[in-house]
Image (tube, rainbow, N blue to C red; front, top):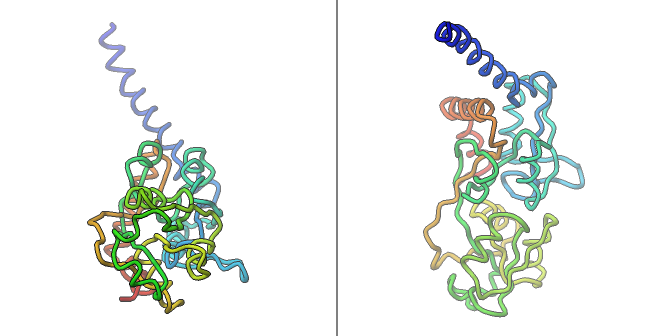
Length: 258
């Protein structure tokens, strides 16, 4: 009798459990609500940049999540966020995913990640007039050198790792970071090679310190709730499909022309 009970009831329980997991997925909550909430900082050109005058976001990431919302047939809501609080926002469910963030194992303890679709290199940006003063990475690692970084982001951690003897200056508000170098208030701005390329096109007096760059892997992905494999799987399938269709390459050509 006991064996018959197990054989009869267990498949039902397994089916019920699988059904509950699927229904409880954020994917189905998004479809029911008709809204996709995406956190973005608006301070990482050319990925996500906020225009305060016209009050809109633009960039590779913005086009990517707009395409995702269109394919889901839901409204896209961009949620302003700071790097220092973005991971906590994912954990607390304040948004469904984020725009591009660098994958690292400290973050991976608390949040999930999509598959990576971009990679970047960490680079120091200085004024061209200071290129003799700072000819290589090692020249930046000394007392009295002020390195400005975005507070709470991976580049703050990179700065403290690569330049332990320098003065690290974390700032939160967008544009305070690289503008401090332009205004002569800081010596170095540590960022990605993608943003550095964009900055140099706008400010010809900026230069990247290239000599002595360490080997590094900075892979970008969307941060997502760690405990929702259904949602993570959906996003990964979607990213692979968009890659195969050539959509992601089209975005790269638009926002990151070589």
